[in-house]
Image (cartoon, rainbow, N blue to C red; front, side):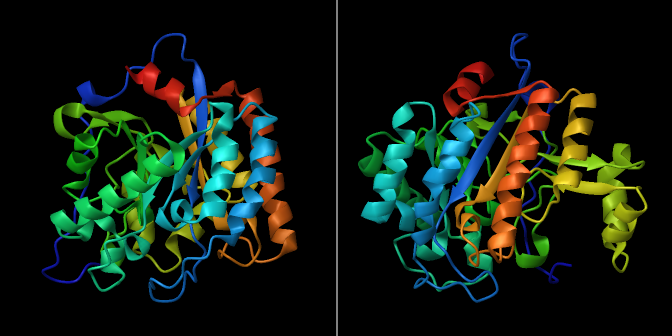
Length: 336
């Protein structure tokens, strides 16, 4: 529910001409984006003081697991990560292969200039005044360019927080790919954007269609999946409705992430995506989840083991279903 009189941004669905027509030899592909960020208490008010990046030390082990399977992630780094010399060194070593990539992720509350009072609403970068959003984006882009020797071309708004001006700011700064939209989700209750009209397929967006929007893939499964968005709204209006619909096999809304999504749900979603002939799947997780205790999704050693097992099972399934990994540069070239 949104407060009376409040104004929120809804991303419009793409026109048919904006949808990416992948080349015939593209096949089925998948890519992993990592929200590479500081550790903070997800239940506490947003604070500028939460800037620790100790969990970055766990990235090399997970990176090796991916690379051994031919998967080269895109690390979407925010300001505390880039500003920490040790974390930046780690990321430089991971991307020295020339295939893994560095992108940008904007967490406004820990990204200079520090002008606004941190709040839940202003944790969505798109809610900032245009000038301040631009200044923060410039500070982040410049820091990444200096740390890694090249300007980032992929962007994600932290908390999926795009706003009406964000895409224009990105295009003006040479970004090519935005991956802020979370298909079929909305953040209206928290003061954030509405992506319920956005499906899982990539499309062109921004001024003069200069950007490629690559949503975090979400797949509807269940008997009602063909009208999934409409039925999910109905379920969400009922007490414990989404859970009841899922347990009854009627409808599940499944984002492709190991965070809060069981491997059984995720595998069912990938199989459905294959049946639907989805050409590109995108996966995502937060780097602090690699160390127990930093996110709600991995609380202990058993949770960390489940997290890694999730990826083992998923990568096996993707291979069986004919989804091959793709790098950020390959994706950008294929989109044309």
